[in-house]
Image (cartoon, rainbow, N blue to C red; front, side, top):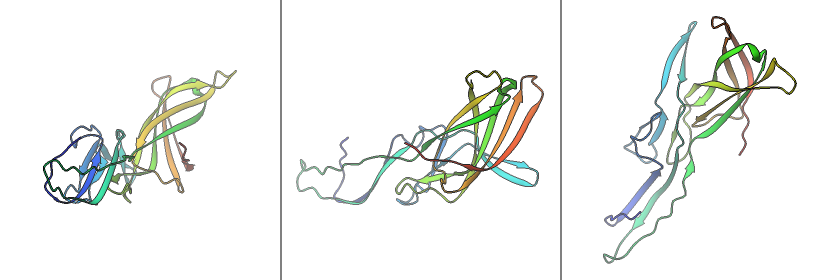
Amino acid sequence: ESLRLPAGVYDVILFNRSFTDFSNIAFRGNDGYETLEAYNKNVETRTDGDTPTRIVTASPEKLASAAVRGSGYSATSADDRSILRLAPEKRTCEVVAVIRVEGLNNVRSAICRLDGISESVFLATGKVSAQSVSQEFLLVNPVFDEGSFTSGTMTGTFSVFGVDFSDEHHLHLEAKLIDGKTVFKEDYDDVKVTESD
């Protein structure tokens, strides 16, 4: 893409869509290079007992950005061009959760919440914010173990701005059973999230 700019020094941030093209991402800090931040738009605050929890109800779409700080441009004639090459980097990553379920034959639907998810990411640096939220996601695709009619796995896939791989996380599971009335709830601590390509 070609742009006609007056001579000067520019800070450039490029990302894969416009500010208004995302359903689940909003932006703040538009007044500065280092403060431009993408954050989860669909966050609800729920109270479970006495503790309020901020929960992302729809994960962010794929986001990538590239940034250059202080790129100079000076044209000596109308035909002079400066070429700026930008290599976008991913600002969201995909998480795939595989949950082993004993009694899978009794599950009608299931939903999970995973804590320790980064609320936002700074587009210029790719650094995630210190604020964390819980991510809600559906478990789908029940797959029974070979030779079993009762045990197997369900999978949930969602995108996040970041997750701390060195930390242990908390997972909350709610499953509605096939009778349509009974809800099974369980909490799991010490859940590890591992990184892969």
